[in-house]
Amino acid sequence: MRKNDILLLDRIIEDLKSQYGEKFDTSERMEIFCFDQILKGYDCTYEEIENCWTDGPNDDGIDGFFLFVDGHIVNQIDDVRASKINPLVSFFVFTVRHADKFQLEPINSMQTSLSELLDLTIDPKSFNYPYSEDILFKRSLFKEVYISLAPRKPHLEIDLCYCSRGETKTISNNLSEPAQRVPCDL
View 1 (cartoon, helix red, strand yellow):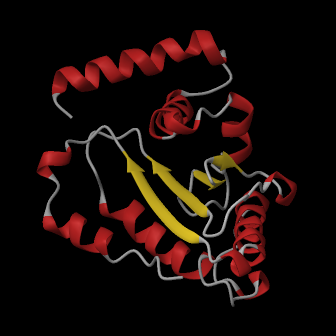
View 2 (cartoon, helix red, strand yellow):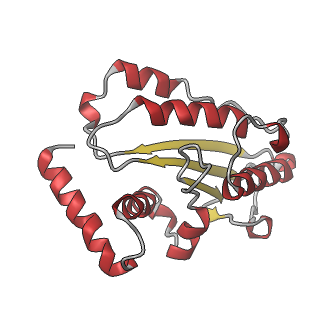
């Protein structure tokens, strides 16, 4: 981001204190802001965003897991409202950093995590990382939804969102190349 853009973004994030109160630090407010901006076409409520917010201990860099079926957010299996053949399953995975530049570490963490989490044949007890209950629940929900919709031949879209205050025009190859290799085969 340009210096002026960073200044404006920081002001917006600071102003979110009035909306969310003092309970969230700057990094947490940035996460909420990024979720809200990227998912604004889905018109999520704050409660829906909070339900998909996975930041915390043992998140391995995954700050948000958002699952939608035909444009409707899914926070439990009863939320699935697929009314057509080939329903669209949209899955968003977020990592958010309140940093001045993009870094390799979040990409590496996401690559490692998603290679396990998106392999639906792996039993969670066999995961290499001790993921939080939130992450395990979201992975289980994704698996259950995806498998339950299999007879309808769902179309799957996975969006990996790495948000930072960094300048996207200056991302070097040592960051963009590993990002292209993040596993998303299902």
